[in-house]
Every structure is written in C-alpha cells, then in structure tokens.
Image (cartoon, rainbow, N blue to C red; front, side, top):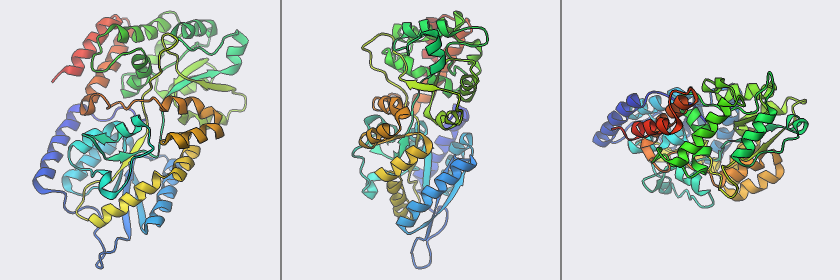
Length: 415
C-alpha cells in the first residue's frame, strides 16, 4: 500500500497529454528492439520496490519466470511517488517497459490513456481470482492487470496487555471503545490508527466507513458520520492519541512495538519485523464492526502487473508469459510466504491460512475486500482526498463528523 503520490491536477494534465499522443500516433517504438532475427531475448520490467531486499526478491522471481519464457528480465525500480508520473512520461515518449507493476488504484487512470493491453489478448484467464481482486485490475469490463498476492488491514493487539487488563479481543465498536479505555494508562494508549492527511489515512478509515454501509459516492450520510464519530470518540476520551493526525502506518507500528499502544490497525507487511521481537506477544483479529451481524468490508491493497502497449507484439507476448507465471498458484504461494501477503486465488489463500495462522484474519478479510476504485473508477482520488480531509477536520474539532463529511462530499463531486 503506497501513500499518496503527486497532485491530482498534475496527474490529470499528464493523463490528457498521454491519451492525446496515443490516440494520434499509436504506441510505436518502446524500450529495446527485437534482435535482427526477430527473436526476443530480453524484456524490461518496472516497479516501485526500491527497498534492497524487496528489489532482490522480485528480481529473483522475475528471473525465474523470465527463464521459463526464454527471456532475461531487466528489472528496474523507482520510488513509489515517482512511478505514475514516470509511466505517463514514458507513454508519451513511447518508451514504456514491457512489463509494468502498478499500485492497484492507479491502474484505472493508466488504462484510461490506452497505454495498457487487455490480458485476454494473450490468453491469460482470470478464473479463480477473488471478485474484488479482479475488480482492481479491470477497466471498462476488460482485465488489464493481475495481482499475484494482495493485502488489507486488520486489528493487531498485544496479548499480554489484554490479558493483564482482563480485556477480550473486541468485535464491535462499543467493545472497541470499552477495551481501548481499559487498556489506556500513563504512557500507553489503548488504540492507534493512521489518520494523517494522505491516502493512507483514507485507507485506514475505509473499513469503518464501508462496513457500516457508508459509500464514497455519498459521503454525507448518517452511516458515514457514525464511522467518523467512532474515531472522534476514541480521541476525545483519551483512548487514542491526537498524534494519529500525523502518524503514518510505520509510526503506528513503532508505537505498538514500543508498548505505547495496546491495539492498532495495520497491515500484514509489519509481520516480519514483529516476529523478530521475541518478547512481543501479539495477535491479529478482524477490524470490529459497529454491531454484531454486520459484514466487515476492508480495502484491497497490493500491486497488479500489466503489459503496456508497444510496437513489438513479440515482446508483449513474452511479457505476458512472465505475467502469467507470476500469477500461477506456485508463485502466489511463494510470494505470500516471502512477503506476508495473501494469495489472490481463494483456493490457494485457504491453504496458506492453514500454514501461516497469523495470516488467517487477513485471508478472511480479503475474501470480501473491495477495490478502492471499484465504485468511482478514475474519480476515486477526489473522494479519497475528501475523506482524509474530513477525518482531519473532525479529529481536530474544527467540524462535527456530519459537517466534515458534507464538505468531503463537495470535494468528491467538484468538477
């Protein structure tokens, strides 16, 4: 899950320019020409895995799939915030990579330009994938990207702290507020979230919004206000620090492992670090819902792999073979074990949950997870901006939840 990148206005300008270029001239050229004999011996791949260990892990995976396709994969990474602008510039200059990874909410805007190719063109089937995961890779009814593994968020809790306080793992909002209050003491808060003014803050709020029947198409509803009121109540009661207004998900993790919060909302990507701390006894549970019987709906995180347009059909075909390899069951399972993510095929994910019990809550949540662009498509960023703006206004006391969400609705529907 990547934080917010460049401004929506700048991206919109680039999108318009790219769409114009592609419609006027096609997508000739591209990185690396075919050999004189027409045989493709190498392809390029671009992602945002700049962390040394992650880059090495993905290089190894791409090499293995490249070998099966008979090509060498030249793997490059750029910082997350730079990826979409770089891709749009490459599309405009017709120098796109052969294989491209995108954070799933970004797929819609890139597909809209015509820079990507539908995967059914290469005979890549989408059977066996969870509905929400397919939605994340789909634009106007065509699948343009597939994710080998995905992620979402859940409730982490300190087992020792809950046990000493005689607190059960909360399942509803009232139980969450009561547990957070009992777990709060000098130097420690009961609960922590990331409520900062970025798409990460929106991402963390979505389970509370969606599970209560809230909808990003209509943010000014009682259901949405109830969800935001929960966060306001936690801060006002002292069960959650006002600093959540500025914390990232990494900051929330640091608070949890340092013992300064007993519970937190976060993702499975924190698991490997927490496993290194032998004195930290933690568990994971689904995020609480307002009342028993409601269905938990969480946002879908993870990256999709795509095949961009270029003049060489042979290069596209090779890239598609590598993409298909990354998304086979064996690679899904290997990637999930390596990165503490969830395989995108439910049948594979079920086996994985049995093998890695700490991932069971995430596997269960992914089955019902929703793509952030599922309702609004390319208009999602405006709604996301409205949501985190509302969260900030309500938690600082500048506006009531209802007032803040009314303003969010105006942001989301602004032309």
